[in-house]
Length: 330
Image (cartoon, rainbow, N blue to C red; front, side, top):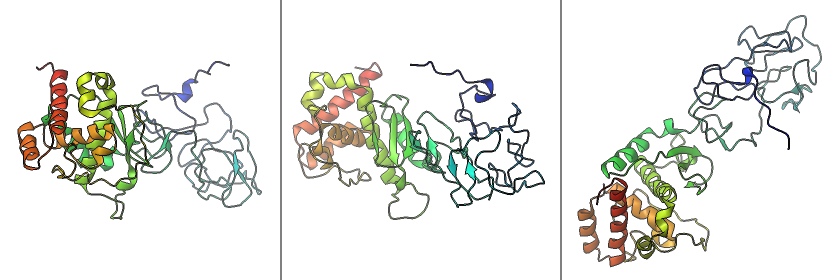
């Protein structure tokens, strides 16, 4: 196995020295706008508008889309001019070759689309490829996690955690395509389905209260994975059961995460969704505990009115005592 090549200085951010890929528009760590000039004299030309390296044979800048045609421009579209590689043909059928990640065809000037399969996820702003470690999208310069689209839900959840006296475990929320959830291999990364936050009034979009409840539920999963050793204790197992067991059915439930009142059905669970799996049982218990600000007296009074069983009381006591133990309280 060959050793990984050390990036050259031009492939590192001049400000924070983060490793870059060629032709990224922004540094994914410090958000610095990047310029890829012809410092190595590969093409011998730069765009007069954006300053990026271009080919003398091109008619349009492949980075900003401006017309740069002059007497040196080729009359026929080329496959790979000097200094550039051939990765695909123009999407619009002009016959010219384009190199990843050119935004425009250098021969006809039309917009190009690329697949970003080697990235872990997609930017919620421009839908291009990003990785989970990126703070800024390298293509559009916006927040790669999409947290700027859900500030109210994040502030609300953060405030509830503080009031509930739960110590921060440095979680990270990101809007991603697909289902919401937390992966055990990355317990601090909480992914929310971005179709719920479209920025437009669509059928899939949910209210801020609903989004906050969903976030608190997923925070419960993240909290559990982050303190996984706690699940091996006898008291936790007696309260919630074996959290390592597999799901028996596909999880296709629609849950009203906006609800703050305890369900009247299922005397041993706080909600119907909590009965589907021990991990969901804990996540729902965590959500109600945080949403009600850790006030056990109010919760237990409601349990009594709704004739909840002893296991429900025990679940909240187990969680409450563990939260206190993390702060060194008895």
